[in-house]
Image (cartoon, rainbow, N blue to C red; front, side, top):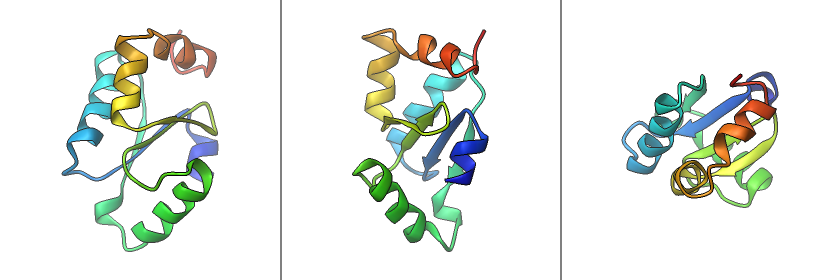
Length: 99
């Protein structure tokens, strides 16, 4: 929770996950800075995923947060918000990530 509060965009991820890669690519393509927390490298991964479940209702990765505590969803959700609804950039601007 502290990482989410201190960083405008946080992606909880596993390095081998294709949906995680998809979510990260969206942010790279629009040149938005983000913090990635790779769970496959952490001994507390199960604990973190349980907290994510409590916060969002889902423990799967990726879990993407924009603007302190606003859960955007997973990889497909981020891609859809970016390409179909065009709502990601305005959301990032509102969070102070993009100008």
